[in-house]
Image (cartoon, rainbow over all chains, first blue to last red; front, side):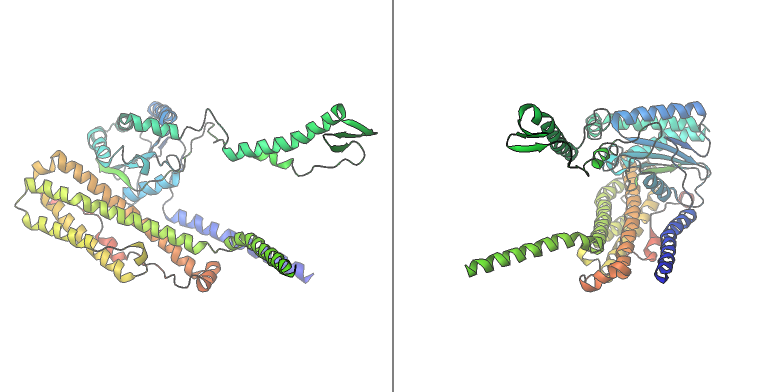
Amino acid sequence: MRHGALMILSRGRLAAFAALPLLIACLAAALAQSLPALTGRVVDNAGIIDASTESDLTARLAAFEDKSSDQIVVATIQSLDGEAIEPYANRLFRTWGLGQAGEDNGILLLVAVDDRRMRIEVGYGLEGTLTDLHSRLIIENTMVPAFRAGNFAGGISQAVEDIILVLEGNAAELEARAERNEDDGSWWPPLPVIFFLTLWIGLFGGSLLFAILAPIFGRKLGPGRYRWLGIDVGYGGSGSSSSGSGRSSGSSGSSWSSGSSGGFSGGGGSSGGGGSSGSW
Amino acid sequence: MIARGIAAGSASSLFKAFVFLALTAPLLAGCGYNTIPTNEERAKAAWSEVLNQYQRRADLIPNLVETVKAFAAQEREVLTAVVEARAAATSIQVSPEMLDNPEALRAFQEGQANLTGALSRLLAVVEAYPELKSSQNFLALQAQLEGTENRIAVARRDYIEAVRVYNTSLRTFPSVIWASLWFTDNEPFATFTIDEDKMEVPEVDFDQND
């Protein structure tokens, strides 16, 4: 009895301990200025992009990702709340995980309206293609004039066009990148899965086949007992159970396919602060 | 016969010991034996990235100095200051093995801080030369320099975070047992002080110089 009470107590405490880091994480996130959610390829929290441009951009960016696996995301916010745009953009980039994991081929185009600042943050993997100078030229020559004229949607749209132009300019590298990250379409399971399935089908199917073929080709020893290829096979009565092998069949496959049905999410890429910022 | 029996016996006990080890080794990992080395390697990798980015900045400087010289040779004093600060900063090397030595890290920081100061003076002087400011070469260098400063800031933040995790694992509960039993010569790593954070990115004030 006392032991049981102790168990309950310790379990309650355990739950409290488990909840504590969660609580702290939530608190820390709330303190460090909440970041916008990644709702799509265009996250227009400042409301400066009109609906038709937004759907245009989304379609263009989705098509470009299909082609190259590069993830470009446009984000606008009202205010940075006193933070510099560089650390904010880096934090946002890493939280969203833009670009494919391991390839880090993401680009974030961030505009902070009240601060009159913009930044193109480039993932590790694209730093060599879209250099700091490229980003700066796109900001200075494309975005700043349009923004000064109050044409936010046009400036952003043209800047995205320029970014894609630069990335496409390095065609060989783009193709190689797309090939490395080509995982949908012709999907093929990894080698261990193939090996496992072959082994499993061989063992299970083999014994099943043996059980079916033994009465046909084997020599009859008695009622329900046959001998084939030197092995005695008995039917009925004490059926040996083959438990345990059934559960593993379902686990392969399903977890490998990336759920790319409609929603958009970052591929797990990271950035080391490449790119350039500007103001208008 | 007897000898063979003994040999077989020791072989089987060896086998048992091997099986025992094979079974317990994963448990060891589960007990957090790996935590400290993992965090240590992570911190060292983060430091390598810091060095990498500072090196990148140092590599940009000769080119920058040459470009400025072409337009503003009379600013000899500022240019020499940059070259000297660069030489001083690059002469201090802190390898990952020296990270538990706060003195070495402080010297490194000071060298780099001096270079940052000299660079920001150079960039301020440049404001007086419109044709230099608008030259393509200078624009490219400036963009690269800014990008590098930002990468340095990111790398430093990552290093500070990695060191925080590593130092915490040396002093907090499950892993502190391993620290006292096995990793006895693992020292906490030194990290950047707040002082140096203040000096940071070269700021160019357009209003004062125009």
